[in-house]
Image (cartoon, rainbow, N blue to C red; front, top):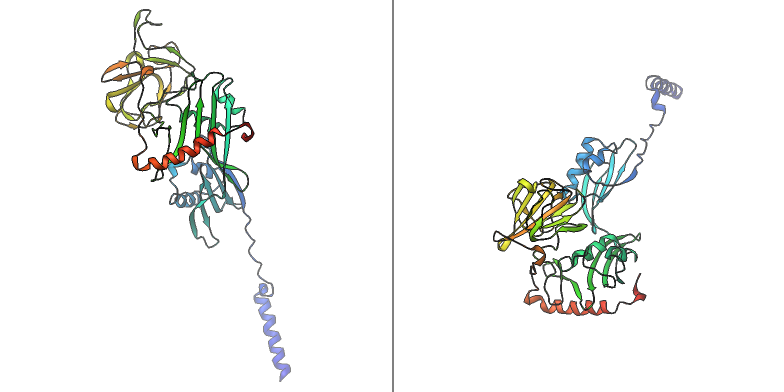
Length: 398
């Protein structure tokens, strides 16, 4: 009887092998996906979607990344110089995406093997340190600071702090001195993530210009002088980075094209074609279009009866049109030579209650002062930072 049972079992097994030959083999495991992380820096003209597409990522996957990133980051803030990292496999399917704008925050989007997508706002890890610099102008502010390996963005920041008091293109002189204290945040890999000036001084002979960074109770920061007045004036010192002033405000100038003497109620700033032109103050665009001999022209109305005029432009910045609100320092157009013009320059004018005035003679007031309730805190910070600036010696230079 046992022999018959064993024989029947053997027959059944043989039949199973014939009908299902694969049953005798183990099912191979699915190959593990291999991901490669790619790092990409956005350049001028890039869009995030187009940049990701260049890596071969499919349209649906692009949409997943961008939609999720948009829940934690304003995509309109994407800028050239921002960096992102994306982990993709051999067929460009993604599993992780991290976006690094300027600053300490970065943004992570991940996709699990079960296709669950999560987005997170994160903060870079690192350490804070204060570094000090001092120097003397030998040729220009830029060259003198660059010789000390001061980062370009800090040089520009220094110039911006005092841009309402000093025109660094024309006023600095050999022998002028400067001091600055810089707070740096350095990542664990040694890369400097942020650097900001917390105190600065510019010292021409017989004068001292000081700028102290003060953070208000509400979190907003601004630079103030030693009297607690904001270093931000109602108007910029100049509407652009220019090579020279080719014509000043005058009631009698010989016109190079018309060959007659006539008034020139503005300032001609000679600059290369395409140089960005900025609004000298906050205001509303009153006119943007063609205006006779001025060529492409912009007129901006400012508070207290002031208006500024920008003539001979090559073109206008995006969104500039009548009725548009503009910020101080916002680019509104680009240097050109339209209208009655012999070469690229900006014909810049300012009026007060419809009467043209000499812009170079205006002493624009500060836009704000330290509030009484914050004055004690400001004085404490002011004393500490001025003491630190005055103690800077060559040995403390990096």
